[in-house]
Each structure stands twice: as C-alpha cells, then as structure tokens.
Length: 107
Image (cartoon, rainbow, N blue to C red; front, top):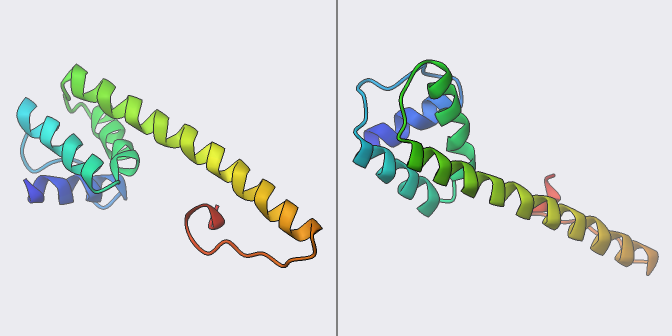
C-alpha cells in the first residue's frame, strides 16, 4: 500500500503519469484514509484529479469523500488566513511587530 501512496504523491508533483498497476476499490479507499491520516488528502487529491484526467477510474464514493474533505480543508484555510491577517493587523496597530512562522504565515 505504501508503494501506491508514494506513486500517488509522485503523480501529484508531476514525477509520474499514473500507477504501475490499477488499484482496487478497497485500495482507493485505503489511499484516501492514509492521505487523510497523514494530513495530505488535499495535496494528493490533485494527483487523483490528474489520474482521472488520464483515464484512471476511481470509485465514485471515494472520489466524493476526497473532494468533500479537500473542500473543507480549503475553506478552513481561507478562514485561518483571514484570522491571521486580522490578528497581525491588530498587533501591528498596537505597536507590536509580528511574524507568523508556521502554516498560515507562509500563505
């Protein structure tokens, strides 16, 4: 299973065009769950979309789960980005210099 996950990551970053073999429905579900567990589901979904465009068949239920989670992550990040900007503005107006070093600060 780890091999498929690494292949999916390579597809995501453009180092590979597809899987070396066709994953089963159960393996697709496991890829989703492992990606979710490692907090890379939003990233690996880009690879899923590339695979789909190249003709790979992913089970519909897994695709919609992955899409839904990716959408939630994107919405959460937009909210956190806004909070970080607001917090930095408040601190700067109070005379403090600010620097967010992780996560949203990079955005």
